[in-house]
Structure formats: C-alpha cells, structure tokens
Length: 402
Image 1 (cartoon, rainbow, N blue to C red):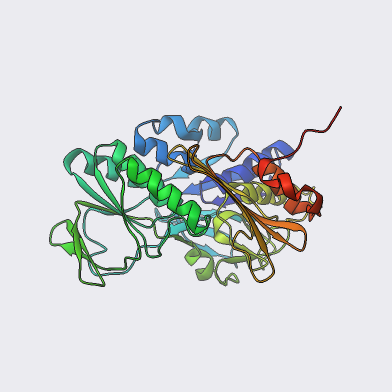
Image 2 (cartoon, helix red, strand yellow; image 1 turned 90 degrees about the vertical axis):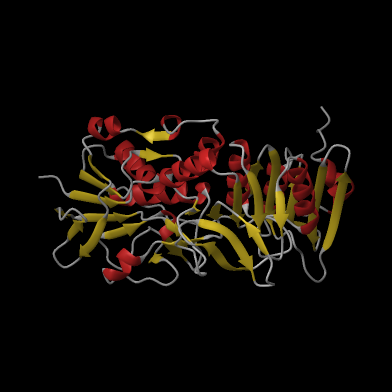
C-alpha cells in the first residue's frame, strides 16, 4: 500500500508543491487534498482582472477538478480540515470525514486582517482575498455607487481600480501619508497618487478609521478626527495574517507563523508546511518567487530525493498597478553615510532612485521605466563595486564595445 499524503490547503503554494512532487515521484503517494473553497486551484494574483471585468473565473483556474482526477488525487473542495490528531495521524474535516496520513503538508495560507472597529461585521464590508469576495464586490457594484477601500497598498489600489472599472466612485483610505509605503519611497508614491487621481481615484491619507456606520448595511465610515464619508461598500485591504489556528490547535510550534526548518519541515518530522502560513528563520512570505522555491525544496524532501535547502533571497518587487510599472528592491530608504542618485523626468512620467553605500548599490526604486530593474538587482546581489559606473548608473548598462 502506498503511503498517504494529505494536503491541507488547495491554493497556489500547496498545489505547486504537489505538481513538483508529481514531476519527481508521480506514484509515490496516495494524495488527498482538502480546500476551504468549492473550486479547484486558481491564481489568486489574477483576482484583480476578474474584478475589473478583464478575465473570468474560468480564465484564472490553474488546476481544474479534472486535473485532480487525472493525477489520481482525491479532492475535497469546500470541506476544510478543522482538526489534526498528530498522535493518531488523522485529520478531520468539517463534514466529519476523517483521513489518515503518513505525511501531512500544511498550506493554509493567510487570512485578511479585518480592522476590529465597530461595524466591521455589517453587510457590505468585505475583504479582497478569494472568488467569493470578488463576487460580493461585483454584486455591490451592480446596485450601489460609493465604495471605500481601506488600505493603500498594492491590493487596495488593485481593488479600487477594479471597482472604478465597474462604475463605482472610489475613495482609498490609508493610515500613513504615502501609498504603498512598503514598496515605494515618498516621491514615487506621490507620482503614483497623482497618476491615479487623474483617472478619478480619490485618496484620504493619514486617516484612521474609528467606526463603520450603518444599521442593516454599511452606510459610511467615521474617522478618529470625527470626519465621515458615505459608503455603500467597504473593502478591507489592510494586510494579512498567517492562518495558523489549525497548526496551533495540533500543538505544532508556531510564533508569528508555523516555524519550519530549511527543508520546510515543522517540529513534527511527518508534517511539512509551505507558503504564507510559514515562518523560516524569522521571515514571513507573501511573494510568489520565494513560495515557488519553497515548493520545489519541500517536494524534493517528500519525494525522498531531498538534499536541497531553502535559502531566502532578496526578492525584487515588480508591480503593475493599474498599468503603471513599479520596481523596488533592497534598502531604498538609505541611512547615515548612504548616497542617493535620482533621475526625474516629469514629461515621460519616469522616476529613478538608486541608493549607494560604500561604493555599492544597496537599493533601487523605479517608477514608469523599469527595464533596468534586473540589472540593478544583479548588482545588489553581487555586492559589486559600482564606483566606475556611477556616472551612467541611472541610465542603465552601457553596451560593451565589440
């Protein structure tokens, strides 16, 4: 009899690990997958185009139900696991179904942080995390006019753009004084804000939500300074938290997330974890590139061919916010002794800021023109001395003479 692999979480991280495993050892395990949503695995990154009306749900499916059947995988979609008994090596789903495992893979992802202010449970208050959220937003856009998005990061701006494309009046509320403050410095954030305002998006910065108002449905938002704005729909995009309740309940070692070693193994050698629910050497993860690498390493160890270790790498953030290209990598704020090289071209809508420290490039922010981003990333990774390149660094690599 084959050993049993149970995967908890039918999202991108878990299924990428299963795909990598099937490529290495297609017949090694009897695989059972449990997912909270009643679908196959879809590309969560493409929810924004679905909201904007540019793609359908079918367009963003990565693994259809047929794929699971073709690969001999048992899928329980819409039946999340609620209990893990590590002593008996059994998981129990909401339906009461129990399945035994020899190896267990946790890919429970993260859950949206809903700001716990009065009114946060009113109808019309949504997150932006899954297909059901998008369907709720599309339904609201058909019947209502005024939307407020809380959170001015990438996800919030994508939600705001999608709702505008559906004909809503949209205001983005952000707690700091500049948009996307995790990825952009203030000058780049101002350029982005200005470009989005020209398209009709409104912003309230340095605004702290104190209450969501309404009786049977949301009608507005009140701020700490006493001001209010009207809203028929409120979308919370104020960050995510690793989804670790199940692991904690099973007695697995968790800090901010499920703690794993360099093989993506938890403190229980039969249990692995990947994706947004894990903590590796104190770091958490949200970008695709490191999670794909985790999937590859984890699959190797599940297949018994594992000798690789997961090594964290600085990942550049390359983003397309409603058609505007942005790229940031490394320490783009700088500190004492660091030096900035800045290029501004207002006519072309281009901004570049490079941070140098001790003759080496340590960070970069690019807005509008991002084609040199990979070159800057390579220079940062190598720790290369850029003293001789300094005068043309802002203009990209100089072609080598033949």
